[in-house]
Length: 200
Ligand SMILES: CC(C)=CCNc1ncnc2c1ncn2[C@@H]1O[C@H](COP(=O)(O)O)[C@@H](O)[C@H]1O
Image 1 (cartoon, rainbow, N blue to C red):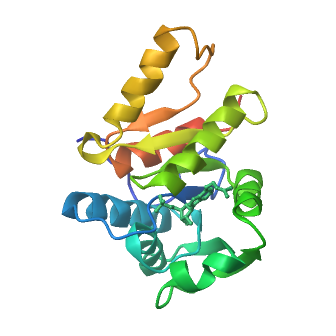
Image 2: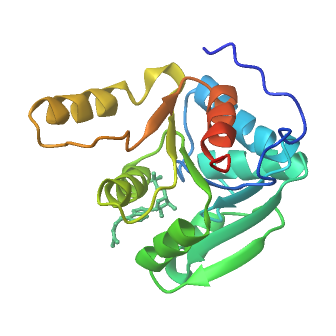
């Protein structure tokens, strides 16, 4: 794990509160260390004075992030398609500004438009889809918002290795990184704040 320390409060000379979009699994995760990473991510967003943008859910890893963010004073915006409201809001989610969309695509468009930076924790197919949407848009030059893959316990090592294999075959070519990785939420937060600093 990284030894990066992130103190409370916003960075001096920084760009103020960030709209941090977090992608992660909607389901319950059976790994205590990954659940702890989800909670640490939410708690850091609140403690650092940033805002959480996420899928609006109240349970699973998403819920862990959101509840920890709320407990640490973050303002939260959830974006959820109508048809997932019952399933993913589960019993309840923390107080938030909730946006209902017609489709999953509109949810992603909303997130891509509104976020300053994206963090991805472990998740399933939905999380993979969201990560690839952001990365492929960066690759095509549609936007330049940082995507940081938080990699607790090396969960994403296989994905990172696959991208390296494809790049080795010249099937992925990019002069600049299309995503970043961080071993811990602390490292991811420090990176998010650094990568979003205004260019001097
Ligand atoms: C029809 C269509 C556009 C399919 C593309 N597939 C998806 N696109 C965007 N978000 C998704 C997709 N599949 C699942 N999700 C959402 O992604 C979130 C994480 O899902 P997961 O637990 O990682 O699995 C959940 O809110 C889930 O509803």
